[in-house]
Amino acid sequence: MRIGDKHLPLNALQGFEAAGRHLNMRAAGEELNVTQSAISHQVRSVERALGKPLFEANRRRLVLTLEGRRLLAAVREALDGIASTALQLGEDAYSGALSVAAPPAFSSQWLIPRLPRFLDLYPDLSLTLTRLTPGEDRVLPKADVVIAFNEVRFPGMRVQSLAEMEMFPVCAPALLATTRQSAPEQLRDATLIHEDGGAIWARWFAAIGADQAAPRRNIHVASTQDALALARAGAGFAINDAFMGGHFLADGTLVRPFGERSFAFGQYALVTRPPERLSSAAVAFCDWLPREIEATPGHRRS
Image 1 (cartoon, rainbow, N blue to C red):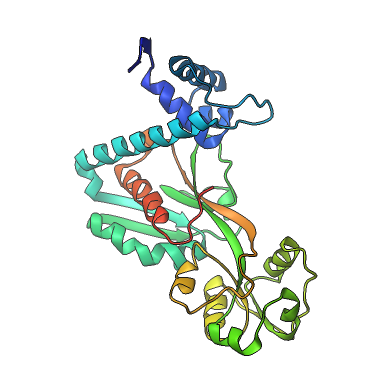
Image 2 (tube, rainbow, N blue to C red):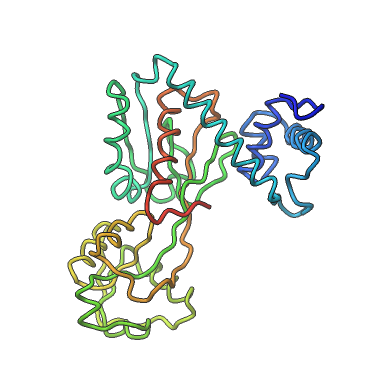
């Protein structure tokens, strides 16, 4: 590829894309199986061809410039388009087997309701879906695709950020009308629903700078799904997020009693082997998943 009178190797754009996505030269090199210095050289060659810096002069960490962010978005779109077209040309993209591992909440609340749309695209594809237990995503299972939560450092693997989680209290509209909750302090007269030992609620109180209220009653359940089901039934106040539980806000079965006050809880990431080592079935899934997430109401990308 030529830019003006300068030659720009395509692998330099791939190296820049990996560096811009990871914001780490070493991680980009591990993903592409080249050295950190090779990635740095590729980035510099792109900068020389453009005549503009793509990263800010910051020795502590990589920060994209405005031009860098624009180029990263364009290169990502181009690479995704190439992968998608190549996938459509490959005969084996519509058959074979695919294994996906994901945390239970992500599987039950978000992925499973949408999987039929993916499977309809590839009717001859066999799928195995397994669930990761808490902490298990620190050591990747033997799966073609892994959705990890709050774990993004896997040397030699490609890690793509999917969605950030912002947590906040929710309740049924009828409960809000009855109790007239408007300030966090008033939760001491309410019922709090927990999907853990109370840590998530404690983090929300700390994030908004309020003393944690001792509620009238606590209810402990085994999963986020159960907590939200109880909240929708009017049993008390639960913690929700706009990404996986946003449809309950959209259909009006849950409301946010304390406005926009929330806290960052973590992020989901897509973890795979480098693209050249993926099966076409895995490439198909990795092409479909981010597009499906982008279309999810309440989605925030990190």
